[in-house]
Length: 191
Image (cartoon, rainbow, N blue to C red):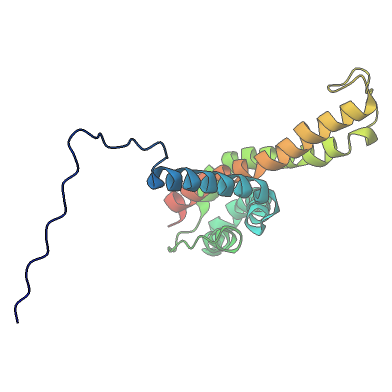
């Protein structure tokens, strides 16, 4: 039994133009949704960063790196354990594993100026947050002449938003950059 071939569809008349689509293509809609989603993820990440454990471990490393480095200078002259102590601090707080068996004297000497700058920026930057959130508690704060004044509520709101909230959002990212610099120095001098 043989079947006859199906007839070909009739061609569209040549005089009728194809209708133009006024809707947005699906790929553009998906791309714009992805952009919105990625922007929302970035904003969420920026807002959550001050409350992460990693941000506070970087703060702890920034504060402890200077005294550890200073103590390691005389310690490195008599023992190989100074390098191990500095590598252990990096491993504990920043999660960086550095192989090597160097004494750590060179790192202790050359990283000290950087560690001094990092601890100063870290302590000042994080102290600005509670100082501005508790702005009304500061002695000598005259709200009539302060930013956000001449009302008490305006001055407090301005200091809390810009000084407190602004620095709380800025400091974790600045700490991330400073920790990356400290890790680069340690990789070059300890491993």
